[in-house]
Image (tube, rainbow, N blue to C red; front, side):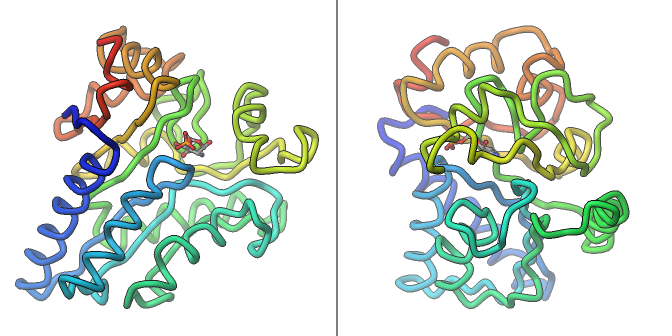
Length: 244
Ligand code: GLP
């Protein structure tokens, strides 16, 4: 779905989420959202906060699982995705903090495998992800699943590509301050979501959107694996769609 601006695209996704929350709420059920970080979802979170404040959208029945987090990183660090989510969304709506799950950049290294297994288990026990929100890296990564990630991958510790560390270095003092590792949901974790919405805005994303949507399904472009999901949409602005 191509919109003339990122604000319009974000309003569309916000509406979809609000409809899902209200449908589930009417049935007395919880809704499980998979959430993303980075600059792309910021306007979506602004829209969700607006819906909460102006249209009484409640997040009391919402359970969230975030895609990823740098490793290691302090939860309070400026670049931490735990901090990002609190600032952009969680502190501004009526969500129960106990329902918000994010991989933790302070997990002990020897515990990570077990923690990742537990993360997967928590998603399953919550009933699986109803709607997964995604951004896309310039190299086609989703979450921090870099090119070459297996379609069978689950939540795990991964090394970051140099291109990702360079792309994300503007948030840090310099490139050497960007962590070399991250914890991310796997491709198979993402593909198990019932619905997936990937968003991309701006000219820089145009080449990778073309490859992900029209190119071969390949682990070299992780987002292209989404072609195999039966309820996945890409929401873009006109420039991000300009090479389609
Ligand atoms: C980061 C995140 C991804 C995100 C991507 C794109 O590396 N781990 O989940 O989709 O970058 O970021 P942006 O939205 O800032 O372009």
